Image (cartoon, rainbow, N blue to C red):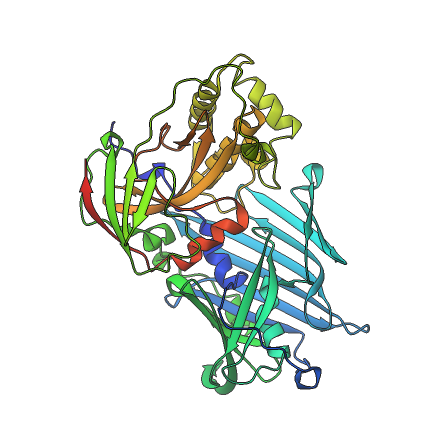
Length: 488
């Protein structure tokens, strides 16, 4: 295979990397939740507006404007507007995120409205709680998808979780458990937040005594420092990301674009061996270290994982099954549409009719769809919540966009399809990446960015699934170490 150009692959989940600091604070602590008596809960009375700068290793990449208002009925109303300039693969793009919420007295939300806008893509999500259900609407107004998620308790919006922990009145070393909803992935998780020792930190030229709270997800630690009125003054997270309270004037000062860090490069992992032609390899063994393996899907299918050693064997495309062969019923779930993989939408169905023929076998459908996406979707880094309809419309995107569109088209064509995310080798480093897994008599990997069926063995699956499943990558980024042991 000819040498792949540098601009042919992009880091997976760039938006999620930044939302981990701005909105996603996740954890599955083994500690039992602490129940806080009502009498210990802390009342919130703070300034209605605050501003924060966003930094990557002290280089400013954005700012946030937050508002917090008490309503007459004991509820609260909040807004969070984020503006960032993000460098991915040498291209700097503007990203705007807006979240409006109405919160109950315990800061669990009753309704929200989330919008993400970048140079090419838009993503909207809104919703409200109704007893034991979360009613969601995703997509642009002319193509909204309704989803109903069952809930056992009213969740907190991800951006307000530290304020909720503050209001719970935690004492030092206490941990409290919450349900949390992240609008960028439409995922609900359990999170435990621990209050650590109070700290005095410098903020806007003054030394301020703060309460410090930390959440930890698979080793990815995120901490926040709160003032006595519950306002978040500072946060720190993965990949050198941090936020700090500033004046409105300081927030409006420009970005350090000349020193902008390429996050795709920062998140990548160097390889100890140069692999000259990965597409020709039939097997690779890699030692994986420095991460918590729980939550990851390292073992299964073409991957065998044991005692920190991962062996990936290139699968063979199976012979065509007999026409009367029935698909295992369990796989039919991977034909269903989802909020971001709208396989039942008329525009997706119309596109499929122009790509495949009714008499095509599952393998033929897979080849045609992958080849069509490879040829027709411009390979360009974008900041978005991947959405198949938006990708079909804009014909542009990175690996995330390729993967969601491929999944939508194949499902619409009757081929069960999943999304896998992990790492792939390119020019001496392993980069975060996304691809597909399609059932054509057996499960076969397919990468529409590289036009590979099956995908080469340097595709290291870390997680499988959409939306919230991909959040498991956050515990890996900036920590995982890889060592190529052998190839053949």
